[in-house]
Image (cartoon, rainbow, N blue to C red; front, side):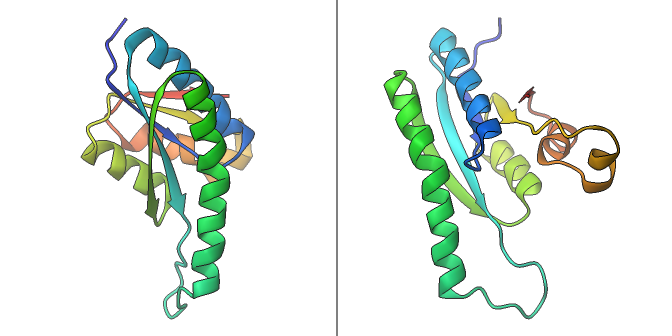
Length: 140
């Protein structure tokens, strides 16, 4: 088995992302890898929309709801856990952060939407899988 030192786990507070974290914790137990939880703030994409204080506060509340339980879970399991946040398009932010942080692996939870819905809507896990050169483990 490959030696992993740094594992990136995108978090959004969903049961899917927690399943990804669970698998990352299992992997870290065998390798001693450090886990970094990464939350991406959704920024307005339409030109002219100002990012208001309420939008910032709402985003911060969502980040805390996603990262807090993940941090507690990892610490209770004895895993080394850090967290970071970013803002923008979720998939591209994950890919960029993983590359810049020189992670050995990305463990990402997937909704398992599949089929036509995925073809039209796309999915973050699908985007990450195809846009990064870092190994990706998708957990359904």
